[in-house]
Amino acid sequence: MRLMKFARLGFAAVTASAVLAVPAVSAQAATGPANVQATHAYLFDQTAHKALWSRAGYTKVPIASLTKLMTAYTVIHKGNLNRTITISPDDAAYPAAHGCTQAYLKAGERITARELLYGMLLPSGCDAAKALSEAYGPGNAAFVRAMNQNAATFGLTSTHYTSVDGVPVSGRGDGWSTARDQVRLALLTMSDPILRGVVGTRTHTLVASKLHRGHTWSNTNLLLGKYPGVIGIKSGFTNAAGYCLLFSAVRNGRTLTGVVLHSTTTAAGVRFTDAGAILDWAFHTHTPMTLTNARVIPGVTTD
Image 1 (tube, rainbow, N blue to C red):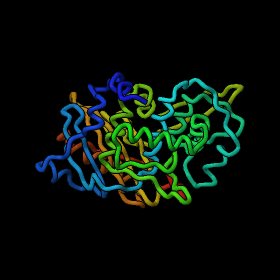
Image 2 (tube, rainbow, N blue to C red):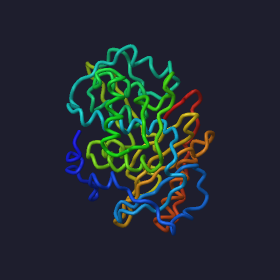
Image 3 (cartoon, rainbow, N blue to C red):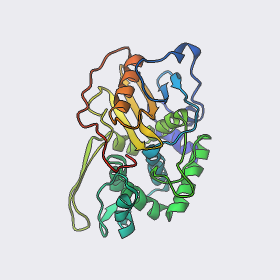
Image 4 (cartoon, rainbow, N blue to C red):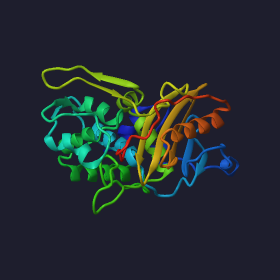
């Protein structure tokens, strides 16, 4: 993968250098927003190319399903999103075996890589992530190596992946990153028009055909449609990572991108209210939100 590829994509004037050199937070901004429970956070003003606020933003911590953004980016840049991938019995059984979220794929279904991106990023389907990694690696181990190579290429020096979905791996544990690196990854993700379209979609329907069943996938990022101007990007949860959220919003010509990591381990909605409080602070506004669907799903280790 070459840096010039990223530079050509263009999203609100993002360039490769914007990812490789997200500036440090100024001392004036250190006080930050009130009532944010996340133990790690970072906020970046993409329009002004200025970091606005950080809380333990350089500390390495688990990132749960935010991992899937690098999985998606790696698939995109391996190419051929129209290839058809056959869901294996192992792919279909993976979520139940690991207690993780799924796109409810069935063995024998044949679905394009493009559609599997929706299955992976909206409901945070670990089955879709596994199917993509096996096809594009080829094989899971090779795919994880490619993810880490991509992280190194883009200067995410405090990021390391052990899986394609954020689920801890026996003998290798959790992957890790920092709040700052995750914001840099968000800039990279949102620079790609395909990924930007996927993570900004609230619900995606794959109509049944001779190759597969019908699927309707809803986005786990409840800020979409609840907080005006939000355009993405991804939620996550494991016991180690807590509830996490990468978010991006546009208001009055300003694009803000941020992250909250470990917004408690018990209340799924806190990550969204944390993000809303951070955005309100930066946009100088107040936005009431009702998040009726934010709940803990028993037995789920990553979303």
